[in-house]
Length: 235
Image 1: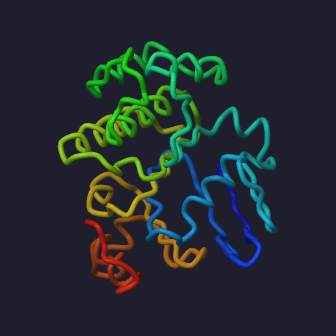
Image 2 (image 1 turned 90 degrees about the vertical axis):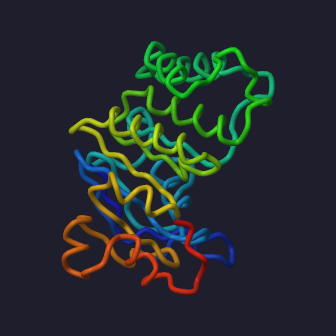
C-alpha cells in the first residue's frame, strides 16, 4: 500500500505538488488524470524515489520511500533513458542487471507481441516504437506497483488497443497499476479508480463507477467539467 500525506514539492518559485494526500491499494488500476503541468509526473517521480518531497510523508508498505521500495516499484517516465548504441535486447540486459525481478522471457515475448525487433537500435525507433519498448520493459518486472507515465502517447489507435490488452493481461490482484494520461477515453474502459490532479492537488478521486453514479457523468465528462477551458482535452 502507498500512503501520501500532505505531500508538497517545490522548485524555487514553482509548487509542482501542493498538499497532496492519497492512498493507493492493491488489486486496482488507477488513472492519474490531468493536463500537462498538473503535477502527475512529479508525483510519480517522488513515489519512484527519483525526487524527494519538500515536505509531507510518503511511505510504501509503511516504510519511507528508499532502497526497499525501489525494488518493488516500476516507473516508466516519458523521457528517453537509453544509450544511443543500445538495441532492444541491450535494454533488456540493462534491466536484468538492475532489477532481480526482471523476466527476460516475458520481455522477449512482449517485444514479439508489440512487433518490435529486439536487435533494432533504439535510436532508430519511432516515438511509438520507443513507447512500446518502455512498456514491455516495465511490464516484464514482477513489481508490486507499476507506474506508466503517458503510456499511450505517440501510439496509433490499433497499437493503443494492443497495449491496453497487454496491460490488462499483466495485471494481478497483488499489484497496483497507475496510468497517467490525458487520453481519458482510452483509459476509462479499463480503470477501477480515477484521480483528478489540478494545480498539484487531488481535485477529485474515487472508484470510477461510484464517481459516474454520484456525478451522473462519465470519467471523460468529469475531466471536461474539472478542467474546463484549461486545455483542449485530447480524447
